Image 1: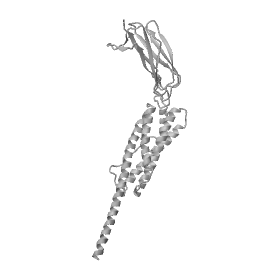
Image 2 (image 1 turned 90 degrees about the horizontal axis):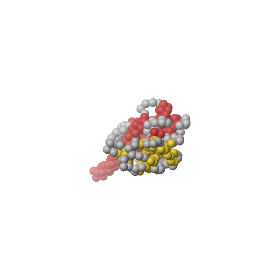
Image 3 (image 1 turned 135 degrees about the vertical axis):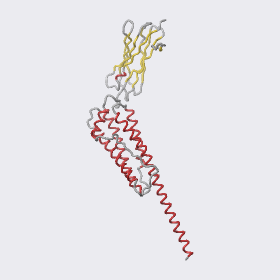
Length: 320
């Protein structure tokens, strides 16, 4: 009997060891899974903070800032979307996976809808339906936030091991208060405000006026040109908008001496960030006279900032 008992005890011990090992592996898998969600939630929480900081400033920001923030949020959501694409290997994680997948899908729809709809509001001022689209995007973001709250509650179940670091709260909804319709109307009005550069607009700007001979700044902080009888002025024009500009007209005026001298030149179409330098014919000058040269763009049609279409410089010519 004793000889039979020893092998039996060894077999039982091996079975227990296998069960314990399997249980340990399952716990380790659960913790690794929760830790991955925790890392993604931390990134998503930062994204949510970025949205909440940006949306109240919608009246004052440019298209580049808006798309940079929204693209960053979309990238974080894409990481989570890829993660929830397959089921976890441990059955106890299925409820968590299901909630997280629903939350991520809602965020994905909300971010995409809100991003495109805000730009649509700016680009199409007469579109009366865009407020409803923005409202749909906001509803998806709120749904994602609420589903993630449920997920955090699910993680607190007794059979789920405590993650090393608790899951942070994630809120991609851009406001702490206000109904969907009210917020959507506010965002439409902000996107269409004349104070921002959200819309697709060209932006011709007089960036610089150059002179030959080159001018310099004197010890008295005055702009001066070495003695000369004529000056050749060149004007640098830049398109700081987000779409190509139409051809335009540039005028230059030199005031001082016997009377104003004027000239004009055509400005070719410029791509965004494109630049051109236009040189004018020589203009006569004389020493010790205060001159003012002004370059001004004549823009027909939309322009992102008409205030930068004009630039002036005051100078004198040194005596021989």
